Amino acid sequence: MKKAAVNIEILHYLGFLELSSQTKVLSYIKSLFKSSPSKRDKDILSFAGFFSKEDLNEMEGAIIEGCEKPDLNEW
Image (cartoon, rainbow, N blue to C red; front, side, top):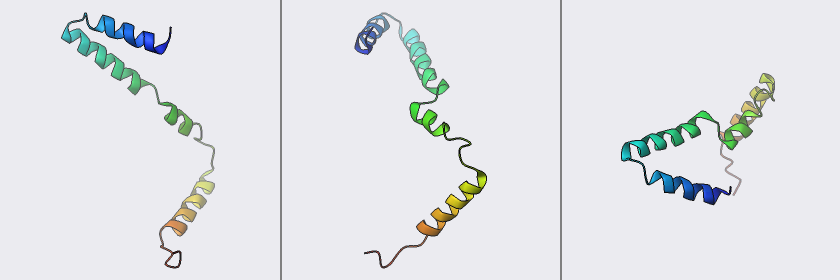
């Protein structure tokens, strides 16, 4: 089934439900987003443990060194 067809069918059946049941359906749908990380979160988590603590400290130092001071001659 295609996504558009599923959406239409869900809306069709949702229309027959009482408001209290519609609210339960909405809560369930929202819970699906909370229980599983988004693709972006999964992409970020794939880097967990990739860098050593020393490498992270070095990157942090470089960021602080390079970003904390404005370069007045840049423009």
